[in-house]
Length: 332
Image (cartoon, rainbow, N blue to C red; front, side):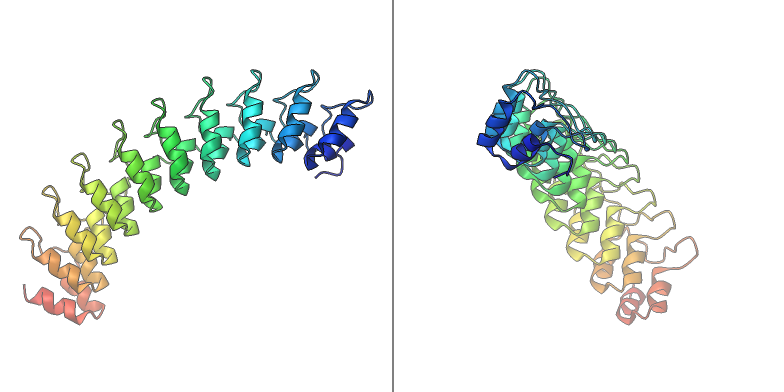
């Protein structure tokens, strides 16, 4: 607590209702006086979830229920950030409280609740008809985006019950909530998002990474299976370097994901990256004998295909000392 606080602010911060009541009875007490950080007694009480004190202060005509501190954080913002459901309800009972009022960094109360996993607070905020559930922060990240990143399934579920929540709204780097959940291995969030009829399961980020690409890169087998079960997911979409999900799986030696991808009838098992390296090339480079064998079972895989520098999978395996892979490739 800032040393510049008034006795009223100190009492409000500690939730000392009796002291607050006594102080509010004095003519020389100013209940809206701010400290050096711009925080009022109401701000202090809301920050700590002291509902009784909040009610007392809101009973005064000279208290602004929506007054922010110097960082633009309102009492509602602080209550939402800290998960104080009762305080949030009390503050939202005032018409002059703006539920969309963002901090100086562009963060709304709903954004804070979503980021910190407070589903109850999110549900209360979404009860206000004037709430904007898609309002992003300065980086373009919506409340849903942060719930997806952190794996807060409860919050994501609450948000996605709203038909006006855009599940495809990407951040400033083009990363959607689905991409974000896939990248972080949040299976539960992926399931919830894929239930939305308006979801685009194949929307790539600015660097070309689709949700399938992200799930493959992370080795999340269950998630890969979920995404490949969708006919509107293209398994051949490459990232900005031309690497397909199959290239990623081969490079990491993940046999199970390689098998899953190859079961798709529309897969191109020989599609090279921008530097000419095929999935077989990556598997040979890594010494993944099992993946090499799986790929060579396909008649549409060319074991002689070299990269842009003329290096074949056989040459690559030999130069890195992968004798067993060399033997497999020479047998072809």
